[in-house]
Length: 214
Image 1 (cartoon, rainbow, N blue to C red):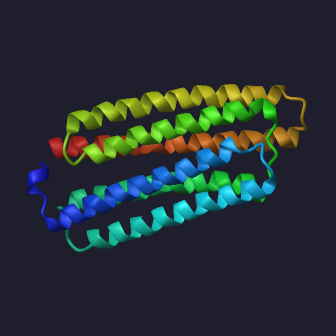
Image 2 (image 1 turned 135 degrees about the vertical axis):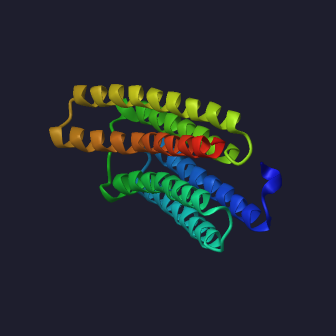
């Protein structure tokens, strides 16, 4: 398949892959923030800013890729599918930024009892994203590898769900006020959203693969 790509297509694939890495970097910055939730608010503010900067960079690359795509590369149907995939990937970076905003803007204090759980949750969400990232990279060349990574994405998303539920159960067992519990529950949902959205993207890639096989 790769042999049939012209110059325009290769530029777009390069930007597409660059965008995947920029989204990965945004999640990586969020992992760092969640690792440091027990630090002072100044440190949390700095790390939140890094997440926002990484998301801005991902956004910039997405716009570049979209602009190149309108120059007429790829067949119209596939171009539409690719645009949809880039936008869906970009939503994952947006989700990471939302988590950072929620932590910083609310000056959220996280009980030490759930710090480890939140770490586990963000790391599993990162693994889920990295599986769909591989699926996206492979969809230009290797359908079999893409399908394998789609299955891994689904499995990791399921594992994220399990961590999400057990963390929420733990939150409700803590001796804190109900508003605090609600606030923490929302945070847990937001982190798990990264994994959910990654699975949504893997479904989209699966459809592209089906269409390209026809």
